[in-house]
Image 1 (cartoon, one colour):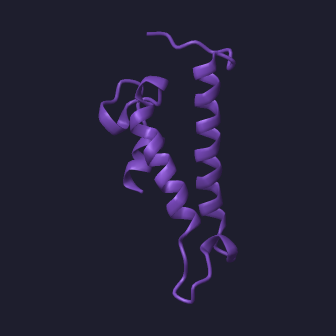
Image 2 (cartoon, rainbow, N blue to C red):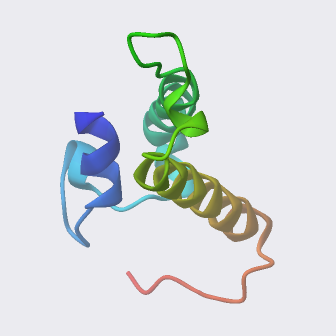
Length: 88
């Protein structure tokens, strides 16, 4: 989860996990997003109930929505359909 938050809190000129999300470093952030998605969806209380099925689900659903949104944005950037250009 620490690496997920590093990706979500990236900087314009950061290094490693703090570098901006780009198609060129998809090999770094995609596995982190996939693992976090799996991890959050399978978190359970001691009684076996998934956290996404409890009253305490808001933060976890928010993280899942953030991951899905960023992945969708990155797909649009890769395909050139987002209409934004990076200035480097």
